Length: 258
Image 1 (cartoon, rainbow, N blue to C red):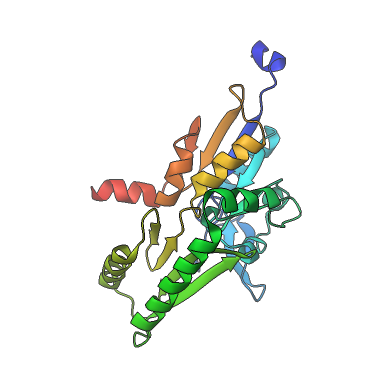
Image 2 (cartoon, rainbow, N blue to C red):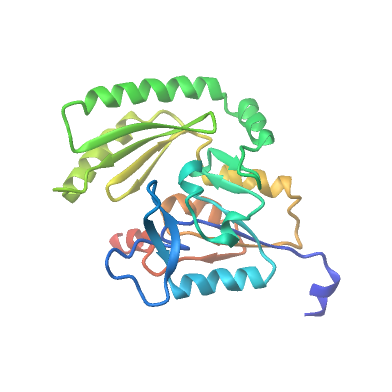
């Protein structure tokens, strides 16, 4: 332990939010759970369990630099009610397409980086065309909703949701097949039950995490924890020193199906 007092070692925690630091428990909210995020009307949307609170507390007491990495767009991220998450120096939102600074404004350096390396205007056009095509394709299907997500002026991804009422797993399989067939080169499809996101090449969490590591002068003496539950979290998690995964994670479900 003596070496820790001599070396300038920092602890970074890059963490997903939904189903990692909090989750929706429906009507079975566990004892001692606290409000973690609200919906657009200010009603409680998800809770943080005692165990999730303890995990965050351990990180905070260890002096960790906590950086949220979430699929939520900026407005949804700002509905979070966990102080240690909201006061973070940076936040990665919209599946990695946007990085917010401490004041929750888009990080100008990030926009410059995207314009230089990812041709933002080109992908804005591509996503708009795909969005219009999907709107037309699903015009007669009232069970599927399609939205184009533009966050902080950055065209990030296309969101596709299947209505909960009357939902059957077969519908997700069908939608997944259609969306995968329409993906352009270097795009990804994030799938989670009834929810899908067609992601631009820069709307990938690992790209944003790597950018922040470089910006914060990450070095060999630093330690990185990565926390997440879904397939879209794995790319940035795989580069960490330690991975923390909730018991009911999508990652485990996929492994059990193989």
